[in-house]
Image (cartoon, rainbow, N blue to C red; front, side, top):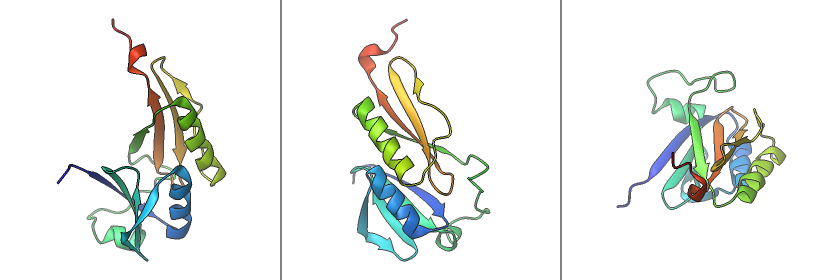
Length: 135
C-alpha cells in the first residue's frame, strides 16, 4: 500500500465545512464518510477527515483546541501555478473563509493562507525550484 496522509480536523458544522473544502477543490469519498465525518480527498495520497467534535473526541485523549484563537497546526498544499494558488484562495474566501495575511513572495515560492470556519489554517503555495537561490 502506498504511503498516505490523513489529516483529522474537528469541525463544529460538518455540512458547512464539507461545502467549504469542496469549494477549495477537495472531493468527498463517500466510502469513508457518514453523518459524523467526511473523508475529503486532495490527491491519491492526501486526505482530510472532517469530524464532528463528538467523533473527533472519540479518538483523542486531550481536549479539542480552540483553533479560532490558537494555532494547532499549519497545513500546506502545493499546487502547479500561482494562478492556482490565487484561484483556490479566492474560492475559500468566497466560501466564507478568511485570509489572515497577505500573499508572501519568497522569490522561488509564493504562498497564501486561508482559514476555515473553525480556524484551521491552510497554506496554499506554488514553488518554482528553477528560481531557488543557489548560494
